[in-house]
Length: 309
Image (cartoon, rainbow, N blue to C red; front, side, top):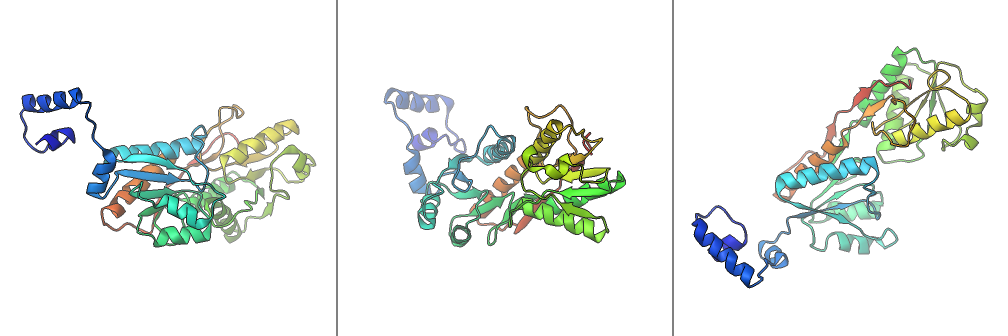
């Protein structure tokens, strides 16, 4: 009976007066429940880890704030704690793997983990692992609809009569940004819509000589794969004396307004990052409890028709 009271169990009928006497005695003795002993006895910690490829998430960043918020909501729903798990990016794969699977957490949510050896070790381990935002081989993933979103964006731009598409090359492979780029280009080519690659991978004014020279045919749109690039491009246009969208339009992906961005509503794609995080926790709970989840869960995105294209 005492252990039921001290562990907060309410499924055994104990008289309120008796429960209070037990708690009062515990307070007088300064007794505290040993969570490590409880975890050892139960074989579970009721804690999930969140690992972001060796760097702790910047919770001041809107994207990470939404993702972590969704993870926290999911953990609260299922009575779990969330541990932001840090393992040095410079450590070797075995050291990182050992740190992530040393028993402190019952399961892992991973983001921005692209080391093939580490991905393989995690996928083959007994620790349940779910990837979010990026689909990784061998483990379930919860992602936004990158491909479907870019097809929506292309439909919108075509309906607006855009003649020139300047595509910002991602320069990355195997992640969500690369999927967006590939899907948009494939959709444009399937519909016979001409596009050209931005000659540079950055969006700083010093690297946008083609833009300063008006080397495009209006109405033109600069297509980026993240809002952060879109807002940087808008700022570069302002410094070069170009108007958005009159001279050139710009579109993004995320729907994550920035407090330091120009006062303009970006045309972009809304990705439900909080829901992605929450859904990833739901999947991890199912895996930890011995259930099965889909290899890939894709959450829909929606077009935000703003003022920039």
